[in-house]
Image (cartoon, rainbow, N blue to C red; front, side, top):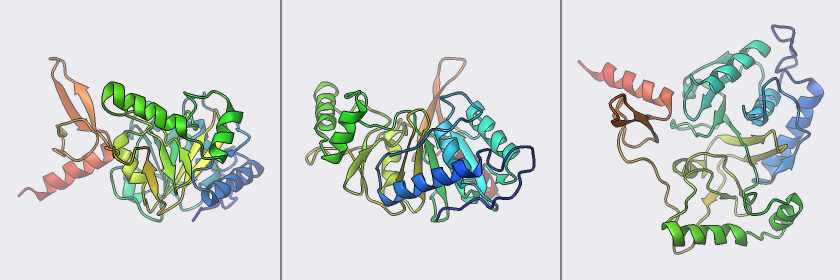
Length: 290
């Protein structure tokens, strides 16, 4: 399931994958533990990467530990392949490995993402690596790590339900449009990273392995393939994912997650957040025309 690095020499002065082999083995052990205990936050040492904090160093550590010969890497930032963040990380891995990179989700074996799950259907041969700024779902209510660890141990998630109740009373629904907590395999509540609530159902039963790397907080956790994932909700108030109402002005899709674009005239329009999905849909539509 987890591709291991072949140990070959990188095409530059860097070790393949940048990290040394001892560090990568330590990260792989943490990843294996995270896969065995879905949703559990496994502590790691937190290794230095040549990018400032906030650029997804946790996800980069996970990708560096996994990437090997024959892998194809896709990097996206909030759905876009061509943002500064995605482009910089892609060029970094092109420099420290000899693997191929791609914009096409279907061609990738490892997908490193910031704040989105790709729109395309994932497969068993793919790994999604999500960058996580805050891995603890109760952090904004409880600042103590010792207390939150004890709450996880006793499945004491009352404060999550209290916050959800307050949101529903005050705003009519959960105010968290992103990073809505999920319960993994009926046990641990986890932060799904700041993905929109629209993406939460895509984690449930996903055939791809989903890994979460939090570099600043030094944590790794996982959602194994075909694992049950439930978004935080009440029995009589079901979870309802949201998306902007409208359709993409480029490809016409009304079922994907949309970004709002403001024109020079002040008018708002929508485009697909997943740029490669949008481009493929436009290509298919134009190819179908006589």
